[in-house]
Length: 143
Image (tube, rainbow, N blue to C red; front, side, top):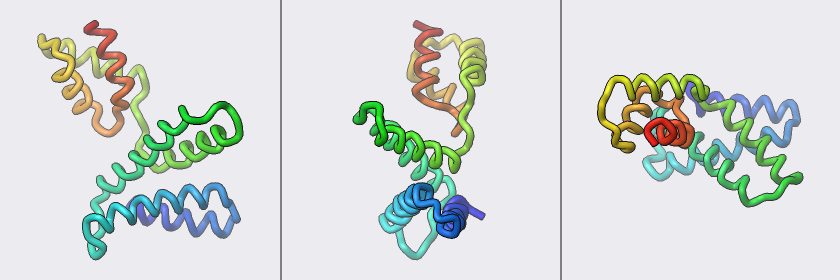
């Protein structure tokens, strides 16, 4: 079962449980997926990798919107929404895992060009890599 199917099943579960907050978030994710699918072709399903990118993109939008709100109810609601969205994404690498990958790449190459090193580290980590954290750690190591 793909991610889209999982979200649709979880929508049904949230409806039965009368969990309005979760239901709202899941409907928004599904809406983003359907919108992207409509941009390509309504008759064919999106590849699983594209669905993952859509959910990840929605999570990034929510994270960016946190800066717009001071501490309070709205910020707390967005944080809760982010937690729900993240439950549908693959787990991110921890800081120690990223540090190990950066060290491994730095040992394997003499190149100290940030862009090239960034590409190598992100290729090593794949979807689990947090580009912002990789960038910070890489700059600190080669800085």
